[in-house]
Length: 315
Image (cartoon, rainbow, N blue to C red; front, side):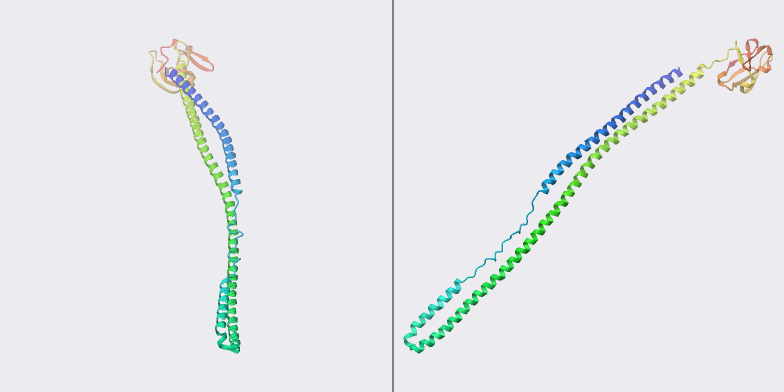
């Protein structure tokens, strides 16, 4: 019964092992197919991301930066001289001189008028010089302001050019950073997700393969046990009515345990080769019994225990 149970358990374990092995192979094939599918997905994702990135880069590349100070107008360039004040002062002075000449004409006489006219002419000349000086001062001021305005406009325009250059350099740096950062980040995220999935699939397939190996090992153990039980149960016991191998050369652990009624020595012993019997037996030694009960077979002595008063049996 124990042998049958071992055989059944061995067959069951073998079946489980075969099933688990098939499952492990199926998982491995599924994992390989998943790897190929994921590789295609990664490639497609990279293409889509690259297309979007190229579009954004082109939009950014086509942006036009302008110098806000280019062709800046010099507000002092067209300044004019304020001549109204000088004209008004000249007119007032001339009117004052005319009034004085008219009031003093009768009292001063001809010579007095001439001297007075000369003095007034001198005063007029001084007034004219003051007016000219006022105009000259305005012109000088205008020239200074125009020069300052031109310098400020030039500096602003140069600063604007540097500003545009900085923007352009920043744009190129930004384009490169965006291209590298987004592409690397997207790829890393996808690859990590796929790697995690692949690791899980590989671990599952490995676990199934390990279980299958264990099941095969159990099957081997059960079948081995069944074989041992079968061998033990099917080893033929010597039949006392047949010639049995009793040659001393084939035995070991020989011990004398008694005598038969006719005085034959009775021994316990084991066979060196289990094909003759497995376990401990009792019987005689062929070299100590009447030779008419001894028959040679295949070069060894066998005994017909039917002719002796000793029972051959397993003990």
